[in-house]
Image (cartoon, helix red, strand yellow):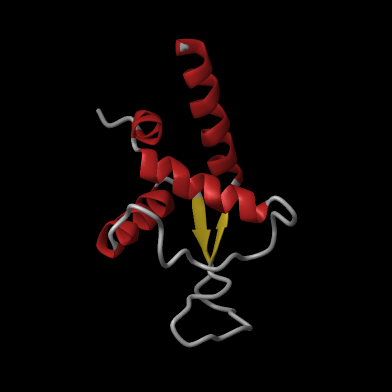
Length: 100
């Protein structure tokens, strides 16, 4: 059986990407955030897969309809962390603290 929480704890890039979306969404949880197009140490193809995982687990939600700002070469206002994503990060961090 696949455990997405284990994947979050062990997948440093996945964890870091979800933390990024939590950080940019702290000021306004309802605001849509720009999609990360480059992430240090992650190849573009892998970044696409990481976003797909976050969406599949329900930790990010995608805005595919209303994007009031269009910018060439950017995917503006298309993602935001979900309450489940915030809980997953908290759970992963509390589990890490218990093992230390």
